[in-house]
Amino acid sequence: GLPARVRIHEVGARDGLQNEKATVPTEVKAEFVHRLADAGLTTIEATSFVHPKWVPQLADAEALMPLLGDLDGVRLPVLVPNERGLDRALALGVREIAVFGSATESFAKANLNRTVDESLAMFEPVVAKARDAGASVRGYLSMCFGDPWEGAVPVDQVAGVAKRLADLGCDELSLGDTIGVATPGHVTALLTTLGEAGLPAARLAVHFHDTYGQALANTLAALRFGVTTVDASAGGLGGCPYAKSATGNLATEDLVWMLTGLGIDTGVDLARLTATSVWMAGHLGRPSPSRTVRALSHE
Ligand code: HMG
Ligand code: MG
Figure: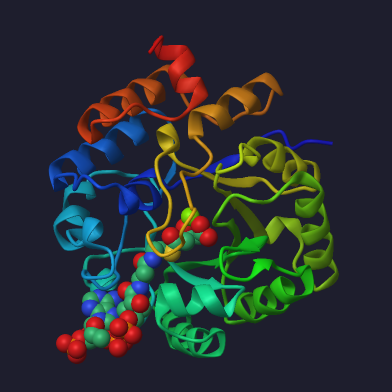
């Protein structure tokens, strides 16, 4: 069966904008988040508290967060890799954070300048301190299907790191197909292995990039398996600056179109969301890659 309702974890303002060549002014980012909230999205990942040299597009996190202070009832998680990032976020009143690990050594090195072991050791005090402060914690796991340097990633390898990340105290684990190579059978195989490792679908989210056009099919496979939290980015913005061949996330509009057709409630107003992505495309100087945005806006 399929779930009656899906929670969309909107990542356009973070995963999307972190990889755009154009630097978007802070005020435009704030308007983007407000427009996403007006379109009915209730979890909107706002930015990252990472090293500003590593991700210059999000270097304005301190300036952005106060501009979002009026968004009652909207969850605004942010990425933090280490204690320095957590302290910066907590100082601004952030209530929800995400750490981000990798199932592969190559990407741990490229993205965090750490081995897998070292990155988990880096996250351990972050998760503990965040929970002590009453913040909820998401754990991202990247390269859950394929890695640009290492090729296909064995499901047992992913399950091993996933379990260690979850055991640090993460409320939820988001499985990243960072370079978009997964196909539905692989999704089912990984979810099966994770279930056997003690990580049921209820604790998982899926995070598909759409490089090979498989993100919707993969999402459907995950929904059939009982996953009810799906990451997506408005207009299909995004990628990852430290993974070659990573393109945009599953577009939120494409996801909403499919879910609506399946009778699954998301609370999202598709017309408002599409208008937001068209507006953002104007700021970025390139059309949205989302098929649904194009169809609905007659671009
Ligand atoms: P490092 O160079 O090893 O840092 O980078 P360090 O710990 O050696 O510290 C060096 C200096 O940086 C120090 O300053 C620190 O204070 C400072 P100094 O003492 O030399 O003056 N520093 C910081 N400054 C501000 N904020 C901080 C911070 N941390 C250290 N948080 C580090 C290690 C983790 C910092 C770096 O690798 C980094 O920032 N990486 C972030 C990369 C990133 O954001 N990638 C994109 C997000 S992941 C993603 O997109 C995948 C996802 O979407 C899922 C999927 O698709 O798979 C989530
Ligand atoms: Mg991503």
